[in-house]
Length: 175
Image (cartoon, rainbow, N blue to C red; front, side, top):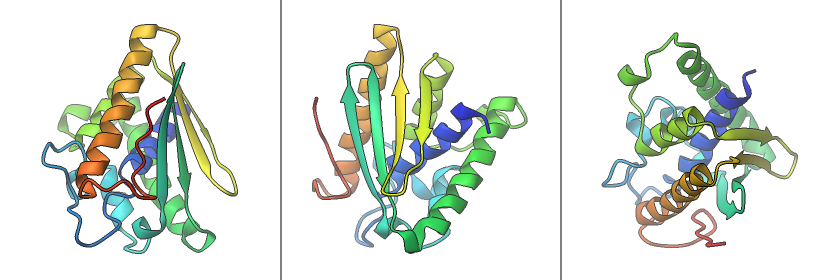
């Protein structure tokens, strides 16, 4: 597995996973930053309608970048893994040149994440029993600032999608 492609899949999932937790919330933000139904990555999270309501996501900045923490109960882990595998395949196809990113429908969050990776951000994905963790870092202070902007925008847009509420599925932390 290519490390960046896997993390791209995971970050995409984490960034949008909880956006459709409740039926009354839209599947996209007005800006298009999140668009679950019209993004080649995000749409994989909708294949099992029970997955999103049972996922949580937290995104936090730290000095060298950001960390994202995802939880999925054991009874929904198979759906989560299947969505991750599908997104990993898409990420690998984009990174290898098999698929043209300019001809691929992505939401703003997914496209921005890809731009961070292309700019040289490094990523690591750590699967766990209680939670999975994605870590995105950079040595260049300017790129760290872009990672922080991405983290802030994801948190802001998630809050907008969830009606401005900050619950267990929509965390905004300034560190």
